[in-house]
Image 1: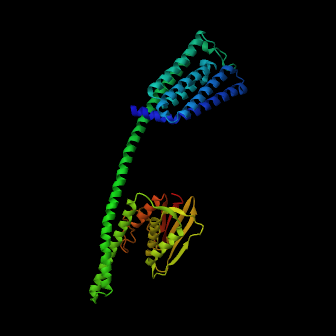
Image 2: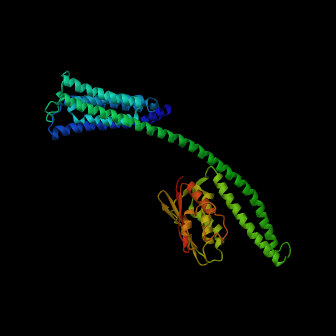
Image 3: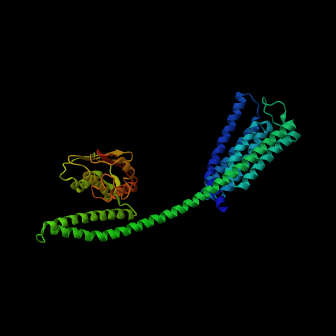
Length: 447
């Protein structure tokens, strides 16, 4: 229950200014309604009491505005009391407004229901019930005292001339309808409001638990990545040494050998290089994922593209592939992690060269976008089957048209997507089997 009250107080603290603005709207509505009734429909309403009520509402509303503004730092603790006092004053002002505009003969009496619903949503149950009964008591007193002649009746001239306030049946029926509507609306509103508040409280609790669990999972994933990175690093060094020693033997520096042995060593080297590439990809993805922060700096994209092209073009040697780079000089600098964005271009370009056949094309295009840049790496290679498109950025996934014909780990594109999204960017791909692929990503200028 204390948590529920705390939730209501928190909501009230946010809504106090809204209630004050709503009161200014109510004042404007009363003035417009008075002018419409008197000027358009020629009704006669006593103006002096009406405008005194408006001035009183405006005065205490201004005081509440100043009070809320001055106490903004600790308004949460007293929000319930402030809202309840405002509600009581509003009820009194509205009751006086009804009294001076015909009493139970005024159809606007049922506008009290709006006040009841709004306050019942925000106030605790007990206070919502109190203000509902207070409304019924005040309106009942007005009807009873006017009927008994103990207070003067203030009719709306030109509207009702039959003196219905003296008709006991009319007074009883109107009051019973009014009071029952107010009370039923209050109980229904309070019931729904409390149920929604409990649900909201439960959602906040579950959200906090999920957030805590998510943080633990993130930390465990980081620790896992650090462990994989350590193991991959320890494995990579001896594998590199093995490849180097095999190269020495194949080059004949260790003496001549039989062709069968040489062929066997070549195939061993291919397998070891495949393992080496796999370990390198594991090392890259673990190193980047275990990093808690980005090493941000101002980068010129054209320089990164040139570096990546020099590194990747070996994959296309001997194929006669046409290469085009379209990156205007006025492309703005971006704030990003140099090594990670360089890896993005290297990976996309290596794939483009690897999967593009003899005489094909590979291109890079960069242009300015809204508060960022849009880069495109495309090729005329084998493309991606449509059924593989939804999974192309999934770890360890390889397209059905390449997994049996070329070596790969299926980690590169997953890491590319992770890097782009970590830079608050977005990446997507368009492709058609046999006609090439175009990878596009957007990076914001500032991080």
